Image 1 (tube, rainbow, N blue to C red):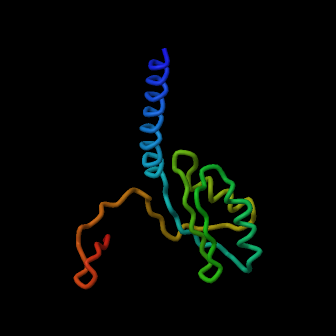
Image 2: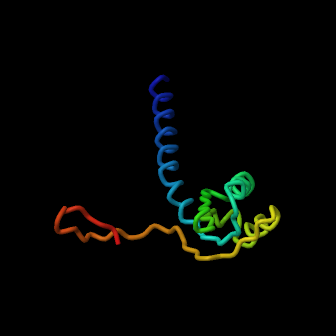
Image 3: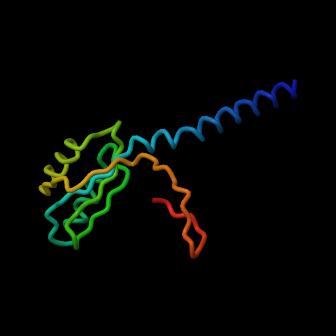
Length: 123
């Protein structure tokens, strides 16, 4: 009886490990990064954005740059979209415009090497 119980526990553990290993890579392909131009005057403006936009549904990463007056936003496209996020910026009286956008899909690594160091450099 102990052998059967041990076999069942091991098989459940292996199945959970295999599903957990496949999960994160599928979730990362749904991420999109967008750079927004926003009217930022001071650190208080950045703090206001960080307090409110960071907790919007689907937002994964948020970086405010006061010097360039931009906000870099990474979000999950299955949970939210860009118009919804732009409305959230308008709600806190910090309207934003899209400066550039890029998808966060995995890029193929290049096998080119640097002649001096011998290290591979992804392009």
